[in-house]
Each structure stands twice: as C-alpha cells, then as structure tokens.
Image (cartoon, rainbow, N blue to C red; front, side, top):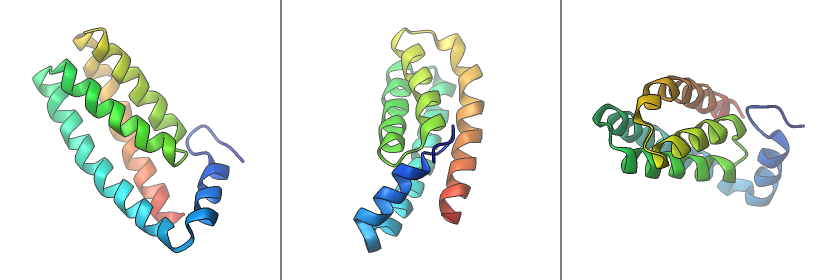
Length: 111
C-alpha cells in the first residue's frame, strides 16, 4: 500500500530485509534528519543557496531510501529552487518541509 506520505510497501520490505537492523536504520534516519533540518533552517536564514541545495538533496536521498515520499518531493522542490538561485522561494518551502519532517519522525516512531 502506498499513500502520498510514506510508501508502506517500501518500509515493510526494508523491515523484512533488515530485520533487527531496521530499528537502527530508523533511529539513525530520525537523528540525522533532525540535524539536517536544523542545518537547512540555518542555511535558509542565511540565504545560502549552495548549502540549502546540498542539505535538501541529502534529506531527499535519505528519505527516498526508506520510502518517505512527500518529504522527498518537498526537498526536491527546495533543491531545485536553490539550484536556480530563487532564494525568495526558500521561506515558502521551509515551513512545509519542517511540518513534514515532524510528521514523518512521529510516524516512524510508531512503525
């Protein structure tokens, strides 16, 4: 089953493949994503487009790897506008990313 936020089939497959290591993967993802969100917020505040692009790309990649769909898409948008140098769009894109990170981290704790 896939919904727009998390690909539950991908998560189940990872859980099956990784077995006991799945909880380590999720713990690491949660910790890293919290840190990266702080970095992204700071880069947005500083209007540092290269850093915004790099951090958004990193969150996107990690999220895709474990089936976090909507956050991946939001980070792709941020990465694209940063690549284009459209720093005026950072402030519009950051709050949805922050909200989605908080939702995802809570959802992963419950999986």
